[in-house]
Every structure is written in structure tokens, then in C-alpha cells.
Image (cartoon, rainbow, N blue to C red):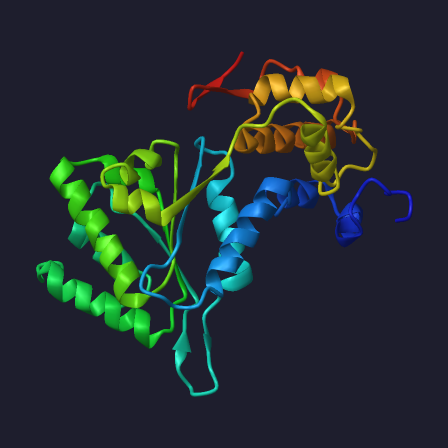
Length: 296
């Protein structure tokens, strides 16, 4: 196994598996760390230890669709948010990771939060009763941070509905004295502008598209460490890096999919490394403004 120096030591055992098993390994979720993701994870971890006060800070994470936002918050949840039972035999849920309702709706927000606790509720109940249930469960489970994904969905609906749901979020933050984190596309910033009080509570951090530079080459080198190929591909080399960037447009999700597809061809063809010819094949699924177009 010492010959596979281009593969991370944690995955060397994969190199002895069959082609089918290595192809299955490609589809398994895997964390690839990079500087901006680390910055966001550090910011989220810092929020968890903030002392309680009447006006808790918040964070809004924004970026293009399919550019790694949800992966980062799932990583945070995996590291810091796993439920457990404390020494007093009480259930603890340090992080509640919920999804915003499909449109700005106060009751929809509460129901989404109640679902995270698998708690019984009646959708016909008043918003006030559902809010009471949410607050009670958050306190009973010692929640430290609330993360709301798809935050931009709160733009869907009338301005009155948008204000109602944002006021509900502010109330939860004030009542529970916990930080609230929103995650969404760049349009999510418009949600905060509905009221200066909301904007002042949230810092905004972005996950931008990748530029073709040394950081992008470093990212490709990190990806190569987790690809179960028997020969080094040297993905960070300028020609390959330029080809990957041209096809993915610097979108992390599209880049990941492209790398998996290329690695799959390298395994099935016996090439065992990703070449420029493989990358330039016309059969890749190419992203076109959010719609995936299958080429000839």
C-alpha cells in the first residue's frame, strides 16, 4: 500500500477493493476542508459558547446554490450538534438544524422546529400555542444554537408575512437568549433589510464561487487525496485545474460531481488516473444556470 502516496492514509484500505466497491466509495459523502469553511465552522463554534444576554448575535451564511453551504452546516451539526443525555438524565440537543418553511409563515416556522423534536402538535393550533411548545422544548433540551436552512424562502410571501416571521425569529432569539443562524442564497440578505433591527443582529459571511488561483489548485489537491485511483492524477497542475474550473465555473458542488464522474471513468476504463482527455469528454452533465444539461 506504500505505493499510493497520493491517497490519504485513512483511505489506503480502499485501494485493495474491487472496481465496484471503489465506485461505490466515490458516492459516499466526505468532508473536504478549506479556509472559508473553517472560518464559518469557527464562527459557529464561537456562537455556541456566547454567554446569554438579551440581544444575542446572529449569523447569515450566504452563497450560490450547490456551493457547499448545507455541507458546512451539516459538518457543524456532526461536530457540535449531536443529541445526548446529560448527567441529570435530561435530553440535550445543542444544535437544532431546521429548514425554513417554503414561504414566509409564522406557524410554518414553528411546525418546522417542532418536527426537529418529533413532538406531537396540531397544525390547527394558534401560532401562540405552537410558539409556546417550541420555547418549552428548546428550554427542556438545552438548545444553544438554532440554524435555519433555506433562509431565502422567507422572501416568498407578502411583506406583512415576511415581517411576521422575522419578528417570530427575533422573539425566539430574545426569549431563549440563543444565537440564530440563517443559511441561504445571497437573496437571503434582502430578508434582513425588511427591518433595520433584523439587519443589526446578523453578521453576514459568504461562500463565494472559486476563482482559478492557488487556492483552487489546493482544493483539487485535497480532492485527489480521497479519490480511490491507483495512479496520481496531479489535479492541481495548471492545465487540469483550468479545465475543471472552466466546466464547473468555480461552483463547489458542480466541481465535486465532475471529479466523481471523472474518477468513475478512470476506474472503469483501467486508466486509474484522471487525464485531460477524460475531463474534456463531451458526455459530462454540464451545469447551465442551475439546470443540468446532458451533453452528447
